Image (cartoon, rainbow, N blue to C red; front, top):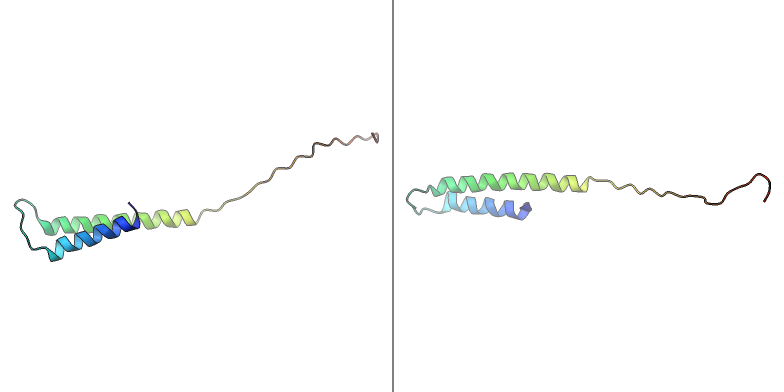
Length: 76
């Protein structure tokens, strides 16, 4: 989902929880808003953790060299 998706859920949840005063039978819009905000916070935290792990990786380059020349002790 990423950082943008988490922020989007937080904004939509805040709008539903604090700004909408409509009533839908059988649905508590305030609770739906709080659930969306919680899901957004969780998504944002997970995205930030994943991003920090991605930036902390290190790469090591190994070069293997072979010397195919044979050295003979008799001078040939």
